[in-house]
Each structure stands twice: as structure tokens, then as C-alpha cells.
Length: 182
Image (cartoon, rainbow, N blue to C red; front, side):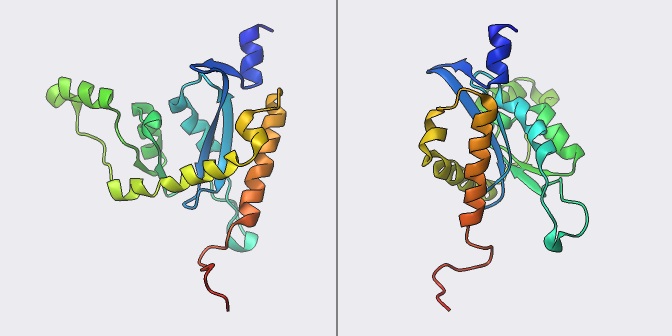
């Protein structure tokens, strides 16, 4: 096994700051994780969206029937904007709210009428994406995750799974107002 293969298996890769690991997460509207994937730091974000969608399994209320595997909509940052991702989301009938990076805008405009229309983007929906960032901030409170003490990728993933499970257990139930004391 080469050094590159070992780093990929352990999800440790080179990035600007040295050895790093990226955490890719699909989260619900409150920042709680539905699916998580770790990759080496140099791996492109845009290639991780489809594998993440394949990991989503949400039990139905009452635990009857198959779990849901398709979200109604996806809101992502510019790193997940690609023609392939947008097409895959359209094929699965998932609404996408992903801003278009400046280089993609320039390329589309440079092509003129052959560049096509800009993808739909709703700024009001995109503002709610801050919940995902808040979820990441809750995970960073765990020192072992924030600094990646674990050498093995499987151990790091297990720690991440544990932290995400605790995040779900500590969450206030949907529709419950924490200020309501009755």
C-alpha cells in the first residue's frame, strides 16, 4: 500500500495547513446530522454530495414502512455547486439551493446564450443554512474531534458518530418551545 492509499483510507490528507481531515454532513433543518462522511483534506467537496445522499436513512413516524432516503430539498455552500450535482438532484426530484461560484457565473456569461440560464437560487432559504454551521460548532466543542487525536479513520468516524448521537439526544423535540414551563 502506498502512502497516498494509506492516507486516503485513514482520511488524512494534505491541505494548506498540513495534515487535515474534512467532515461532510447532510443535516436536518436544525443542524442535526442525517449522514456524515470523512475524507482527506485535499479531496474535492463537490464529489461528496452524491455519496452523502446515498447514506441518508430517516425512520418514518411510528417506525412503519421503509425509511426515507430522499430529502425534500438540499441547501449547500458553493463548494457543492457543479453541473453533475445539480443534475443528480434534479433526477431525484430534490430542490437545490446552492449558490453559483463566481467562476461558474463568469463561464456561463462568457458563453452567452449557449451558457444557459442561471440555476434557481432563493436567498431566504439559503439564510437558514446557518443551522448546519451551528451543528458543526457544537461538534467542535469536543476537543478530540476538533483536533483529530485519532490516527485511524475508523476511530475518528466512531467518535464523530458518538458526538452526533449525543447531539440528537440533547436536542429539544421538534415543535417544543424551551421557554414553555408547563
